[in-house]
Image 1: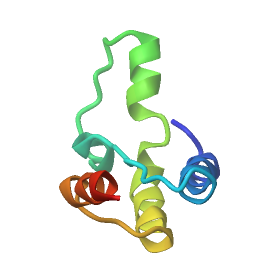
Image 2: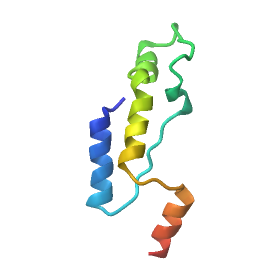
Image 3: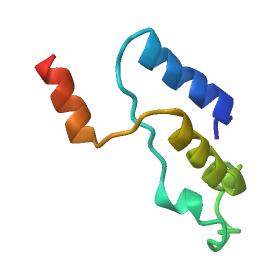
Length: 82
């Protein structure tokens, strides 16, 4: 639901100011723009589930290009060793 610019700013803050790694989590269904619509679900649930669904792939591609990524086990093992 958050705009990419806000997500990017928060990740940069953690990386640059706190010198820590971030976890960028998304649900696999957030990339499926053709998923069936649940018309009878409550309005709040439908909004949360479908808002900006068509933009998620572009957000993910931007994040992949702008940040360094690695597996969770490597990131946290390296942090423990430091």
